[in-house]
Image (cartoon, rainbow, N blue to C red; front, top):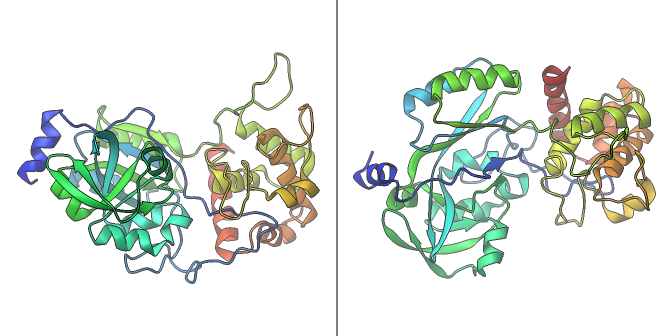
Amino acid sequence: MPATRRALASSGAVVFLLAGTTAMRPAPPGADPAVTASASPAATATPGATSSGNVRTTISPDLLVIEPSGLSARQLARVSAAAGVRRVVTADGAAIRLNGHRVNVLGVNPGQFRSWTPLATATNQRVWTALKNGRFVTSDTLAGRHGLHPGRNYLITGARREQLTFAGSAPLGISGIDALVGEQDSAQLGLVPGVLALVSAPGAGMARLMKAVRAITGRSAKLVSLRPAQQRLPVDASAGSSRPSTYLQLFRASAARYCPGLSWTVLAAIGQIESGDGANNGPSSAGALGPMQFLPSTWREWGITAFGESGPPDIMNPLDAVPAAARLLCAAGAGSPPGLRGAIFSYNHATWYVNEVLALAQQYARDYG
């Protein structure tokens, strides 16, 4: 490890901010029943991407690993070899200062990391060319908060002080991460090597996966499951109410009530891919909104008030949006196996999307039965 990086990792003066850092599965931009979305040119090919451009598809991470002192090459090799693990990507990182403001920055290999970002970002060649050429990219939130302007230089202070050009903002896919830099700038700034890893293990049970990774990393690492189907709904359930209180309950109840014959796992997969179960409610670039990403025009046709909610159908309320999605899918033929692929395709007109939904649905079936 270069001396500047060793100093940063050991000094404690600049550390990676763990509090509130979570990740979500990469989500396609603005998928909606009323939007005919075409896949990226190579979307049906083998997952992966290159810094020069052709995104094969996005990769859905199952586990986030944060190790403040950095994961060693041996640890990463062991994680990669763990049962059920298909892919692992790592990033350097630290909390450093951007124009005097403390921010969480990741240093990434653009060709390796881009497939793990939201599809809108993975297919944005400007982002990855900028990182390769020594510029930095931020989250949309950070750029707006601090009034950053593309093309201007900003002072970034880590182990060294660097003037870097701001290339623009994009959804980064990891809540709590503010900016990305490329490998060369990561070394110059002294980011902690291997501070973060994303693990894709669609065939592994989460409890077993976390146990295996914990045995490799020890107690110092923070492990975060990225399968949020059991997270609580952002809607309070009154005492004695029969309303679902978690997304898992909501997907199951919505499928059973509004589309008998449709597996709840398909609804769960769509909810996760569309918004990370309410983590990214839009509006999308197409104007889609809510946890199931409906266009307002489609919502006027399919939106319903469900599970004891009051008032008109609310596109932002999962207790309305998930049942509405079940109704739409059922009308498109999802209630029977022969019609399932076509119904999912009607939700977002892309073959890669159908394949990703079905693969994730199988994963939910394995994890939750």
